[in-house]
Amino acid sequence: MSLRAPGSQSRTAPIAALDYEMAQERASALGRLGRALEAALAALCSYDNRHGERDAARVQLVQDASDALWCFMVQREACGLRDPRPVLRHYGVPAEVYARMGAFGRR
Image (tube, rainbow, N blue to C red; front, top):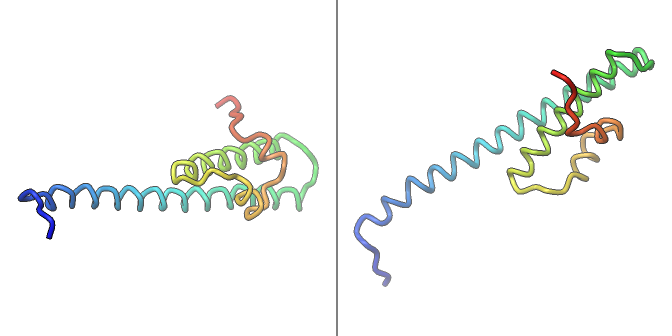
């Protein structure tokens, strides 16, 4: 039999609930950012399939995809997932997008 101070469980319950809500929000944000990354990569792939040339529009699509990748990677790290290799493989991230990750242009 363990002894607890009166009301000790009532003090830890709100903390556990808050921890649970924060974990839910981290996971939800990771999902949103993953979908944004998929959309940015799909737009780049679609553009390449239609045009193929390297013009200002394509440069902007590469920048958008690299920004989305950076945001996704930062959120993954906040969730404790540090290795980028599974993301690069799973999403099929082009090398030029990965190389620009974190390099923000003028805005």
